[in-house]
Every structure is written in C-alpha cells, then in structure tokens.
Image 1: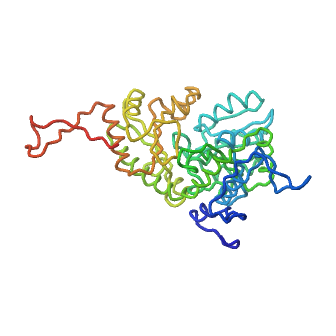
Image 2 (image 1 turned 180 degrees about the horizontal axis):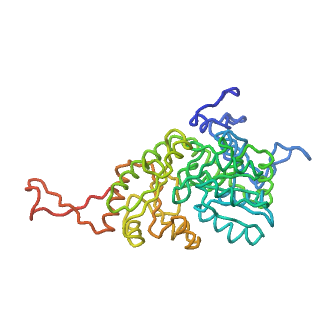
Image 3 (image 1 turned 60 degrees about the vertical axis):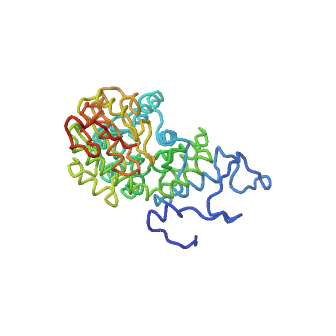
Length: 418
C-alpha cells in the first residue's frame, strides 16, 4: 500500500489501515510472531521488542489496525475485554475515587465494580444514563470516570454519548464507552467527544468465535501510555495467535455488520408481529422509544446485530424457547457469524443482584439474540418454531400429494429450519 494513501471508507480502513506488507518477506498477510523473547543486537540496542508480555509484533499490528479504524492512536490490546476494562479502571482510579456507570450494563462490569474495585476503596454509582441529567447529578468531587455502554446489554437502551461527553468535559472527568455492540463501524464515540473506547474484541471485531481479546482505544497519548504500563505490570497482553486471528477478522467487519444489521431488523420485525412475544428491544424498529437518538448516533442507518425480547409466559416460556431452538445456539457469547441465544438472568448477568436486574428491565424471561449472518428467513423460522413449541401451538396440517387438502386424511407435520 502506498504510504501517502488517504484512507476514507470503513471497509478500506479495516483491510489496509495500520497494516503493510512484511518488510522482510513481502508477505501480504501479517506474519504470526509466536516468539516470547527477542534477540538484542547489542547491549541497549534492539528492534523495539524485548519480551511478549510487554509487546509483540503481531499484537502491534492489530493495535495499529484498530487505532486506524477508530481514527485514533494505536490501541492497547488485552487477553480479554474484561482485562482491558480492568486496566482502564486501574489507570484512572485509586482508593477514594468514584466512578459513575450506566445501570444497564454488562454483568461482568457490575461484578468488577461491586466485588473487586469496592474492596480497593473505589466507589461506584449506577445510574440511568439514558437521561444525561442523571449522570450529571451523580458526579461528586472525587468522581474520576464516567463509564457507559450504548446500546446497553441486554436491554438495548441507548445513552446520548455526545451529551454525556460534554458533561464529563465540563466537570474535568474522563468518559469511557463500551462500544462492543456496534464497533466504530456503526458508532464512533471518540468523534462524539469521549476520551476512550473499550472493546471485547472477542465479539464482532473478531467475529468468528475463535479468539478472545479486548482493547482500549483513545486519542489521548498520555492515557494510553498509562494503560500500557498497567498492562505491563499485570501481564494482561493478548496472545500473538489470538491477535493474528483478530487481524483477519477485522478485515470483514464492515461487511459483516451490514448483514448482521439487516438480519436483526428482519428478525425484530417478525418477533414483534408474533402474538406470543410480549416485547422486542431493537433500535432499528420504528417504535423503539429512542428511535430519534438511534438515527442520530448510529451510522449508515445500521443498528447492529443485537436485540432482546420477552415471550409471553415469562421465565418458563423463555426456557422452553431456549431449549427448543435448533439453528440458533444457546451460548454466553455474541457477535459471531452464527445466531446465538443467551438467557441473561442465568448466564451473562447471573452475578447481578436480582433487584438491580429488575430495576433496569432484565426480567427472568428476557432472551438476548445475537443475530448472525445466516439467511434471515431461516433464523426467523427457527425462533418462531421454538416459540410455538413453548406455547404448545398445534402444528397446521400439511396435506400430502393427491390429498383433499385437509380433513381426516391429513397428517400433522412440523417443518423445522436447521
């Protein structure tokens, strides 16, 4: 790639941004460097690498790629998303400090704040960040960080990122966004004024359920240097092979997210029309409560591949749906090319106190769907069949060839998309 090439589009950036052919061999694909250590040319003279706990060429390639995708400095990559999040908290917070967080947020974040950071003398307050005024009111003199997630996991509730960024800036408080659900392809929090984005690259960014990882992305060089120092001290860097797989996954990220979004909208509309579904949460629906914000904040008319819904009948019906699906897999994961189902109450948010869950709308019967890139009609057929089984809806008779079309000779059959 020419060095003076100006990258514009997301797809071009995902494929070429931050990357170049290997200078030694001309290899088009980034080499996988599995070495744990690197030879010094002389005392005090090296090629920039010493030990893979501190830095690694393959990890550096991913960091450059993710930074380019965000229009930022090279990212800092970690073994998992929670490792990235933990390093960010340790970089900005110390005993006696206070952090304001959105109330509908990943269960692992709640657990980290309430069961780990609290023991270090760091206080956390969870507020309904869908109203930015709640964030402003929660600020204290010792508040050092505002941490939000939009769309929220798993309710899909949105936060006005730009409004919260302005509140943080006015108060001199750093603002971070977990942008895992949408990635910079659909939502660009740094452009909206926040200081840092956190990702579980395990999800959409890698996209194929083959590599765990996380990243911190920012345009603040001093902040990133502190995060790198924490990573060095705690040993949380991503493994080279995991980074190599993620570099490959990023290259198709924009293409995949378009299909994820199109499929999710089709699935959401079908579920909304199903009489056995009580509610559907998806920002792309016309009746989504924050539709105007979704249109303003999300790029390209896309709203991602995540939705959640509740079937009539509560928890018992939800469990039947989850156990009856065939094409859709029941897993604690999201963002893969396959369609994935999750029961937040028993999986992602099992450690979150029940009163907290119910307050933010995570009911016992809520089902989260990470809509894959299969053919949308097949996804819909599988979900509708599972919902029908949960409500014991009699199958319609299917007439055999030469039959009268019904009556006593017709044998009930059920067609399942697998």
